[in-house]
Image 1 (cartoon, helix red, strand yellow):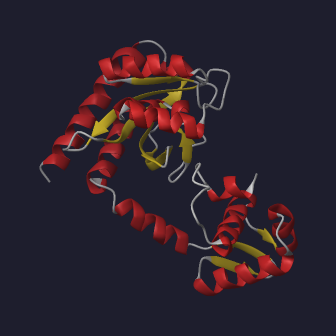
Image 2: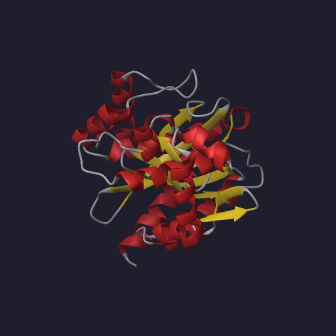
Length: 263
């Protein structure tokens, strides 16, 4: 992984940046990728000198963002506090969370709410139903929009100019053999989603995992994000995907939109 990828440059490399901060975030993201590590391991993984890594780690430890246990370093829970604050600032967050819990209870599957930030889908809430199965999503996870039902639902609600901007910047990388990697095919599907209000994923993000999603709009008609239900293909095929789940999701989305509008 390059330093630009680690920093999440997003095609904005022409802007002036502070090199020392880029180094800090490279180390932080390496700690995340490695699940913690020792000084030598982090220096090797980042390609940054041990002395520089040590100085940045010492600063992060002093500020409470990294914890040192013996010779091992790991991310501290102060990041959880920052992330929780960022999510709490999102419009309607106090309304969305209980509705995702309700959606998971009604469907017995995994319910989640995603929004878009810098051309990526971000999971803000993920609730597990009684029959929920593990997947690669978790709260805070960033994903490519075109790979998920929620992401495609969000794209369908964005202006065409913004959609093309995201596709130019992020591309259409493949996650599974079912992922849409052709721009025209994706644009056709987005047009269908605008007509029906429902988006589908048939193992496009994770093999064997199907999902149904619907976009959610703010009172000014800009897309806020998308609500989705996902589950194993053998339970989702047929009526659940075509009738039952779309009806439940659209009802939940409508309730959230009304509650936000009149809050």
